[in-house]
Amino acid sequence: MATLTARRVGHFFGRLRLFRDLSVSLHGGESLAVTGANGSGKSTLLRILAGALSPRQGTVTLQVDGESLSEEEHPLRAGLVAPAVGVYEELTARETLRFLARARRLHSADARIEAVLDTVGLAERADDPVGAYSSGMQQRVKYAAALLARPPLLLLDEPSAHLDVEQRVRATSAIRRYAENHDATVMV
Image (cartoon, rainbow, N blue to C red; front, top):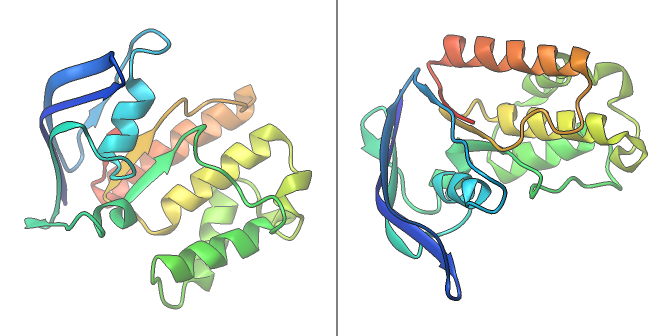
């Protein structure tokens, strides 16, 4: 079970202050939606909580099974789906996931790779270059990458971007099942 704690977090770019003194605590199985206008800092906040960006002030801690993770381990245990997350267009979806499995030190990940490809509906196109995919299919590669390591923390920034109605329903259902089956903390 994961616990995500942010204490008095703030971030700014030059003189532009996005947010300050933001505190939140989420525990395994809990979900939270963050809303706000464009440019209000939602994406930046999610990147900070995922461990992909350091806050300018405050602290963020991710605990898994009661043990605090290091700054290096934190992003390896968080799944992030976001427009800022890129895809490797030269690689196939399967190659992308194999690469990410090695980077995250996941051993014997072939079955897990096939399972997430099936979950996101890309099993039949898994050997096509990601650069040949539609933007919706590339979004599904991001979902597969986020779910691959079975993270206890899942952060979704604009999760329905580029997905058609059928794929939005599929993604919502998959995330709901994932959160329930893995007692995951989800932030949208």
